[in-house]
Length: 133
Image 1 (cartoon, rainbow, N blue to C red):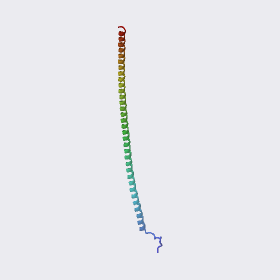
Image 2: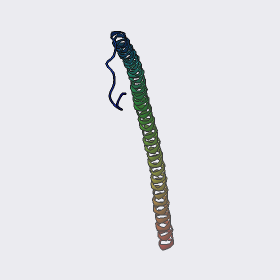
Image 3: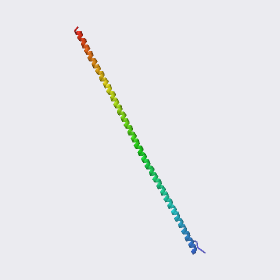
Image 4: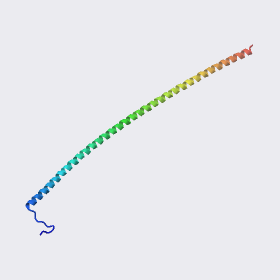
């Protein structure tokens, strides 16, 4: 009669079979470990490739933004330059008009002065004729 928990000693063949099973399980675990390691390695490579792609895209975006900003700034500078040129031309045109109006006023004043002198001389001549009949 055997007590629960108490076993009979294993025969040499049973020991060999048990040892073979333990070795087979250990080899399976090693094979699974290798597979897991290879999968992790492949995953790391894939993640590294994704990271490299993200960095390339980020750099391309940075360059594109820099280029677009420079182009926008250049366009703005050209617009301001054109605006300044138009404003300067408008001021010059206004100055020419003012000069023309001043010249016309001066010419008109000279005519009036000339006509006043002539009128004065005609009046003086008429007075002289009247005083010396």
